[in-house]
Image (cartoon, one colour):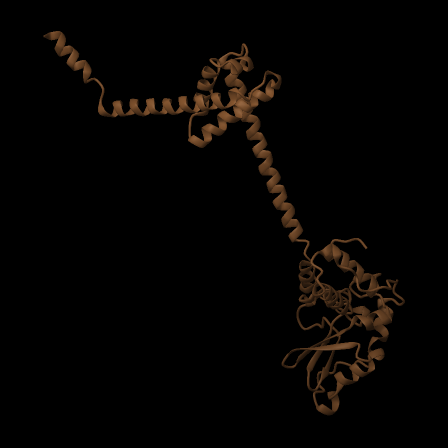
Length: 328
């Protein structure tokens, strides 16, 4: 009677959770066993002793692929494949005298190599992506934007017709009441500030790039300079400054003279004397800007005030190479 009671108590030593866990473990083992059997049966007729390492690689590849597909423990699956493989003639020949530990070590080494290959593939993909981004950054429209930004910075075109003005003459923007540009007054336009000759060169390059984009050029490397004659300057920037006002009939800046009879038609006079080579831009009420177009600057071919030693054509090529990444 006592023995029966003890046996009854022993039958109930497992809790419901423990029984559930045991069942799940058995099901998992069954899944691993089925997967191992499937791998061995599939590869048995395909393996050859002549393959040596490549045969093992095929086995390892199958193990890790199956483990990933069915969410199985790869090490446990490798153990089951090894044990089942030992029961198959061709598998047994491939495994030879290899111990289980050696088989598992080989599996781990294979996994490490694959991980490294994956990392290299990721790095290659990243490099490819970077290359694509670099290609994107080589678009002709990027060169156009870069040139366009230069036109928006008026400080790049500061200059003076008076070489004695030091910083102002050297192209440095002066804050305060001092003048940063040659100035004259016009009755209709108001105060007219003249940009340095560099402005017309930059504007021409922008227009030249835009023309080629309109013709279908999409990459920087395919852009071409649209000037043919690149030459040294014929006169120095100091000499040009001395004759500039006389050359283009630029009026003196006399702020006390504001009547139409004094300053009326000044822009027209300058435009006529320069044969349309000096262009004007309305900047707002009582304010305008002027600049030499490239054709005029190239015709005169003076040294540029903010790019010592360079003629307009030389500066054009310098800027072209800078924004396109070429070396022409």
